[in-house]
Length: 249
Image (cartoon, rainbow, N blue to C red; front, top):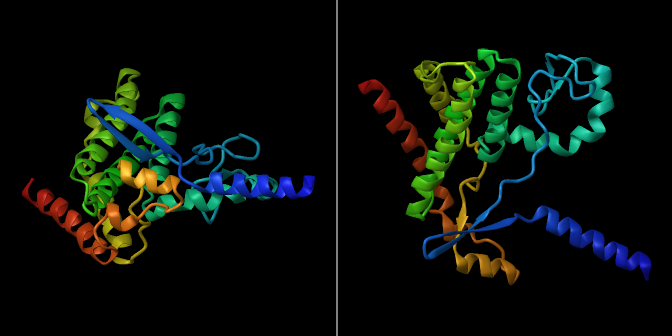
């Protein structure tokens, strides 16, 4: 009996762990339900995850975890393997993971007071903004389009302001047109390759969808987004707009 209860508990735990966490937020007379950002592995820029020393070698799969030697990588694999695939989604445009990578670069810049980490983080910031715009274009919820973009801009902006206040960088350092062009080009490449992850990073759920999830019906992607067949066209359309703006400037 104990083994049976243990098995049931394990199954329930796995289901709970795999399911998205719902966060309730109130504003004025309205209540919004959204999926909380997933828990992600620690990201330490240029620091060996095995021993903590300076490192330059990256995991060949996620390309975000550093090691100083093969021995450290082998020793850390048991801990890293569960999060490796999650981190790899940053290169497929997963917004939550990309924001974690951006924050890791800002933390590194604050710790070392070196501008080069701001510059690398800025590239991830622009990539994130482009990706949020792309996914918002696929949403049926008009309020998501503005809300998701402004959330990223405000939260990322606060980290940039901290670095400016610490004199790690200047406001002028944060206006890099080439970095933005690079972000658009990157997004176009993986969009045309159909390599982008599904547009769930900016998803926000209404009451009916939230109640349906409690009843076991799950989240209906079609309720929140335009048909999947139209995603690529909408996403490329956002990039076309960005490139047209760049030509006018």
